[in-house]
Length: 246
Image 1 (cartoon, one colour):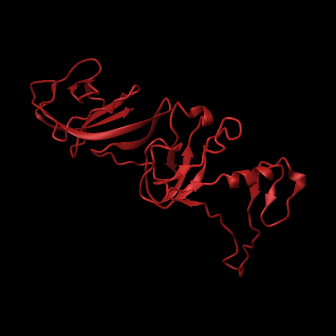
Image 2 (cartoon, one colour):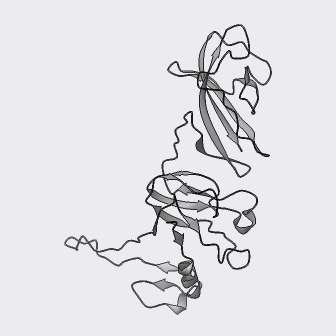
Image 3 (cartoon, rainbow, N blue to C red):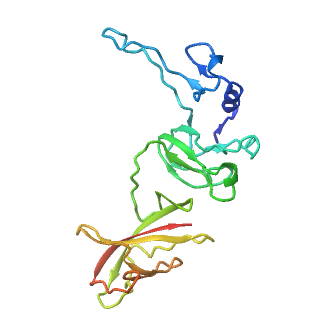
Protein backbone atom coordinates (compact mmCIF):
# COMPACT_ATOMS: atom_id res chain seq x y z
CA UNK A 1 0.00 0.00 0.00
CA UNK A 2 1.29 3.43 -0.86
CA UNK A 3 1.90 5.67 2.13
CA UNK A 4 0.45 9.17 2.01
CA UNK A 5 2.25 11.61 4.32
CA UNK A 6 -0.51 13.87 5.59
CA UNK A 7 -0.34 17.64 5.45
CA UNK A 8 -2.37 17.90 8.66
CA UNK A 9 0.80 18.41 10.70
CA UNK A 10 1.79 21.36 8.54
CA UNK A 11 -1.66 22.85 8.83
CA UNK A 12 -1.57 22.45 12.59
CA UNK A 13 1.79 24.14 12.92
CA UNK A 14 0.59 26.96 10.70
CA UNK A 15 -2.21 27.76 13.11
CA UNK A 16 0.22 28.33 15.97
CA UNK A 17 3.01 29.98 14.00
CA UNK A 18 2.31 33.39 15.57
CA UNK A 19 3.94 32.37 18.85
CA UNK A 20 6.76 30.18 20.05
CA UNK A 21 5.55 26.82 21.32
CA UNK A 22 7.33 25.32 24.31
CA UNK A 23 6.56 21.65 24.80
CA UNK A 24 7.48 21.85 28.47
CA UNK A 25 5.77 25.19 29.23
CA UNK A 26 2.67 27.16 28.16
CA UNK A 27 2.78 29.20 24.96
CA UNK A 28 4.87 32.33 25.49
CA UNK A 29 3.06 35.11 23.65
CA UNK A 30 5.74 37.68 24.54
CA UNK A 31 8.24 36.16 22.11
CA UNK A 32 5.98 36.10 19.07
CA UNK A 33 8.77 37.06 16.66
CA UNK A 34 11.21 34.40 17.80
CA UNK A 35 12.86 32.37 15.05
CA UNK A 36 12.04 29.22 16.98
CA UNK A 37 8.64 27.76 16.10
CA UNK A 38 8.81 24.66 18.30
CA UNK A 39 11.06 24.44 21.35
CA UNK A 40 11.38 20.94 22.74
CA UNK A 41 14.44 21.55 24.91
CA UNK A 42 14.47 19.88 28.32
CA UNK A 43 15.75 21.34 31.57
CA UNK A 44 17.98 18.83 33.27
CA UNK A 45 20.87 18.83 35.69
CA UNK A 46 24.42 17.83 34.83
CA UNK A 47 25.35 17.51 38.48
CA UNK A 48 26.63 14.25 39.89
CA UNK A 49 23.70 12.09 40.90
CA UNK A 50 21.29 13.49 38.33
CA UNK A 51 19.05 10.88 36.78
CA UNK A 52 20.55 9.57 33.52
CA UNK A 53 17.24 9.25 31.68
CA UNK A 54 16.22 12.90 31.91
CA UNK A 55 15.84 14.42 28.43
CA UNK A 56 13.60 14.01 25.41
CA UNK A 57 14.02 13.42 21.70
CA UNK A 58 11.87 13.75 18.59
CA UNK A 59 10.67 10.72 16.65
CA UNK A 60 10.58 11.61 12.95
CA UNK A 61 7.65 10.07 10.99
CA UNK A 62 8.56 6.67 9.59
CA UNK A 63 7.66 5.95 5.96
CA UNK A 64 8.27 3.45 3.18
CA UNK A 65 10.00 5.61 0.54
CA UNK A 66 9.95 2.75 -1.97
CA UNK A 67 6.14 3.04 -2.18
CA UNK A 68 5.73 6.59 -0.90
CA UNK A 69 3.82 9.26 -2.79
CA UNK A 70 2.85 12.80 -1.78
CA UNK A 71 -0.68 13.99 -1.09
CA UNK A 72 -0.90 16.82 -3.63
CA UNK A 73 -4.29 18.14 -2.44
CA UNK A 74 -2.78 21.43 -1.20
CA UNK A 75 0.29 21.42 -3.41
CA UNK A 76 -0.03 24.54 -5.52
CA UNK A 77 1.79 27.81 -5.90
CA UNK A 78 -0.58 29.71 -3.59
CA UNK A 79 -1.14 27.56 -0.49
CA UNK A 80 1.91 25.32 -0.58
CA UNK A 81 4.67 26.92 -2.70
CA UNK A 82 7.57 24.90 -1.24
CA UNK A 83 6.33 21.64 -2.76
CA UNK A 84 7.75 19.64 0.17
CA UNK A 85 11.28 21.04 -0.20
CA UNK A 86 13.23 20.18 2.97
CA UNK A 87 10.72 17.65 4.35
CA UNK A 88 12.42 15.05 6.61
CA UNK A 89 11.35 11.44 7.09
CA UNK A 90 12.78 8.22 8.46
CA UNK A 91 12.77 5.63 5.67
CA UNK A 92 12.39 2.00 6.75
CA UNK A 93 12.60 0.33 3.32
CA UNK A 94 15.27 -0.72 0.83
CA UNK A 95 14.73 -0.24 -2.90
CA UNK A 96 14.04 2.55 -5.41
CA UNK A 97 11.63 5.47 -5.05
CA UNK A 98 8.61 5.83 -7.31
CA UNK A 99 8.93 7.59 -10.66
CA UNK A 100 5.32 8.63 -11.25
CA UNK A 101 2.27 9.87 -9.39
CA UNK A 102 4.19 12.12 -6.98
CA UNK A 103 6.88 14.78 -6.76
CA UNK A 104 9.62 12.18 -6.28
CA UNK A 105 9.96 11.71 -10.03
CA UNK A 106 13.70 11.05 -9.84
CA UNK A 107 14.18 7.33 -9.17
CA UNK A 108 16.60 7.06 -6.26
CA UNK A 109 18.03 4.05 -4.45
CA UNK A 110 17.20 4.27 -0.73
CA UNK A 111 18.01 2.26 2.39
CA UNK A 112 16.80 2.54 6.01
CA UNK A 113 17.76 5.92 7.45
CA UNK A 114 16.87 9.62 7.50
CA UNK A 115 16.11 11.38 4.21
CA UNK A 116 15.11 14.89 3.16
CA UNK A 117 13.28 15.94 0.01
CA UNK A 118 15.35 18.23 -2.22
CA UNK A 119 13.17 20.46 -4.40
CA UNK A 120 14.85 23.90 -4.17
CA UNK A 121 12.64 25.74 -6.66
CA UNK A 122 9.43 24.62 -5.01
CA UNK A 123 6.25 24.88 -7.02
CA UNK A 124 8.11 26.53 -9.90
CA UNK A 125 10.22 23.37 -10.20
CA UNK A 126 7.36 21.16 -11.39
CA UNK A 127 8.36 21.08 -15.05
CA UNK A 128 12.03 21.98 -14.62
CA UNK A 129 13.65 19.24 -12.55
CA UNK A 130 11.92 16.55 -10.48
CA UNK A 131 12.54 16.61 -6.75
CA UNK A 132 14.75 13.91 -5.25
CA UNK A 133 15.13 12.19 -1.88
CA UNK A 134 18.61 12.65 -0.40
CA UNK A 135 20.10 10.99 2.70
CA UNK A 136 20.23 13.33 5.68
CA UNK A 137 23.77 13.57 6.99
CA UNK A 138 24.58 10.31 5.29
CA UNK A 139 27.82 8.99 3.87
CA UNK A 140 28.64 11.18 0.82
CA UNK A 141 30.46 8.30 -0.87
CA UNK A 142 28.84 6.38 -3.71
CA UNK A 143 29.99 3.18 -5.38
CA UNK A 144 30.18 3.37 -9.17
CA UNK A 145 29.43 0.03 -10.82
CA UNK A 146 28.41 -1.21 -14.27
CA UNK A 147 24.84 -0.35 -13.29
CA UNK A 148 23.63 3.25 -13.35
CA UNK A 149 24.80 4.98 -10.17
CA UNK A 150 23.38 8.21 -8.73
CA UNK A 151 26.24 10.54 -7.77
CA UNK A 152 26.22 13.48 -5.33
CA UNK A 153 26.82 15.97 -8.17
CA UNK A 154 24.38 18.28 -9.95
CA UNK A 155 25.06 20.26 -13.13
CA UNK A 156 22.71 23.21 -13.70
CA UNK A 157 20.33 21.56 -11.26
CA UNK A 158 20.39 18.24 -13.12
CA UNK A 159 21.41 15.00 -11.47
CA UNK A 160 24.70 13.44 -12.61
CA UNK A 161 24.77 9.64 -13.01
CA UNK A 162 27.74 7.34 -13.55
CA UNK A 163 28.59 3.93 -14.99
CA UNK A 164 31.82 1.95 -14.98
CA UNK A 165 33.15 -0.14 -17.84
CA UNK A 166 36.27 -1.45 -19.57
CA UNK A 167 37.73 -1.14 -23.03
CA UNK A 168 40.50 -2.95 -24.87
CA UNK A 169 43.13 -0.93 -26.73
CA UNK A 170 45.14 -2.50 -29.56
CA UNK A 171 48.17 -0.23 -29.26
CA UNK A 172 47.79 0.82 -32.93
CA UNK A 173 44.50 2.73 -32.96
CA UNK A 174 42.90 5.56 -30.97
CA UNK A 175 39.60 3.64 -30.95
CA UNK A 176 39.14 0.67 -28.59
CA UNK A 177 38.82 -2.74 -30.23
CA UNK A 178 36.15 -3.96 -27.81
CA UNK A 179 34.23 -3.24 -24.61
CA UNK A 180 34.22 -6.34 -22.31
CA UNK A 181 31.31 -5.00 -20.22
CA UNK A 182 29.47 -3.48 -23.19
CA UNK A 183 29.88 0.09 -24.43
CA UNK A 184 28.33 2.70 -22.12
CA UNK A 185 25.63 4.72 -23.87
CA UNK A 186 23.76 7.62 -22.28
CA UNK A 187 19.96 7.20 -21.90
CA UNK A 188 18.30 9.19 -24.66
CA UNK A 189 16.58 12.47 -23.76
CA UNK A 190 16.43 16.03 -24.94
CA UNK A 191 18.86 17.09 -22.22
CA UNK A 192 21.24 14.10 -22.20
CA UNK A 193 24.88 15.09 -22.01
CA UNK A 194 28.23 13.62 -20.99
CA UNK A 195 29.69 15.44 -17.98
CA UNK A 196 33.01 13.62 -17.70
CA UNK A 197 34.82 10.48 -18.86
CA UNK A 198 37.71 9.23 -16.72
CA UNK A 199 40.11 6.51 -17.86
CA UNK A 200 42.27 4.66 -15.33
CA UNK A 201 44.07 1.39 -14.69
CA UNK A 202 42.75 -0.39 -11.61
CA UNK A 203 45.50 -1.63 -9.32
CA UNK A 204 48.29 0.33 -11.01
CA UNK A 205 47.84 3.87 -9.71
CA UNK A 206 47.77 5.17 -13.28
CA UNK A 207 45.01 7.70 -13.95
CA UNK A 208 44.27 9.28 -17.31
CA UNK A 209 41.84 11.96 -16.14
CA UNK A 210 39.39 12.94 -18.88
CA UNK A 211 41.46 10.78 -21.18
CA UNK A 212 38.92 10.64 -23.98
CA UNK A 213 39.15 12.80 -27.12
CA UNK A 214 35.57 12.19 -28.28
CA UNK A 215 32.60 10.22 -27.08
CA UNK A 216 29.40 9.14 -28.84
CA UNK A 217 26.59 9.23 -26.29
CA UNK A 218 24.30 7.10 -28.47
CA UNK A 219 26.48 4.01 -28.75
CA UNK A 220 29.28 4.56 -26.25
CA UNK A 221 32.11 4.54 -28.81
CA UNK A 222 35.09 6.61 -27.72
CA UNK A 223 38.40 7.85 -29.08
CA UNK A 224 41.29 7.96 -26.62
CA UNK A 225 43.28 11.12 -26.06
CA UNK A 226 42.91 14.62 -24.66
CA UNK A 227 40.96 17.74 -25.66
CA UNK A 228 43.90 18.82 -27.86
CA UNK A 229 44.96 15.56 -29.54
CA UNK A 230 44.06 11.92 -29.93
CA UNK A 231 46.34 9.37 -28.29
CA UNK A 232 47.07 5.72 -29.00
CA UNK A 233 46.99 3.83 -25.71
CA UNK A 234 49.42 0.89 -25.26
CA UNK A 235 47.79 -2.48 -25.90
CA UNK A 236 45.92 -3.41 -22.73
CA UNK A 237 42.53 -3.40 -21.01
CA UNK A 238 41.55 -0.14 -19.35
CA UNK A 239 38.87 0.87 -16.86
CA UNK A 240 36.74 3.94 -17.47
CA UNK A 241 33.83 5.80 -15.87
CA UNK A 242 31.26 7.85 -17.75
CA UNK A 243 29.38 10.57 -15.83
CA UNK A 244 26.34 12.05 -17.54
CA UNK A 245 23.02 13.84 -17.17
CA UNK A 246 19.78 12.72 -18.79
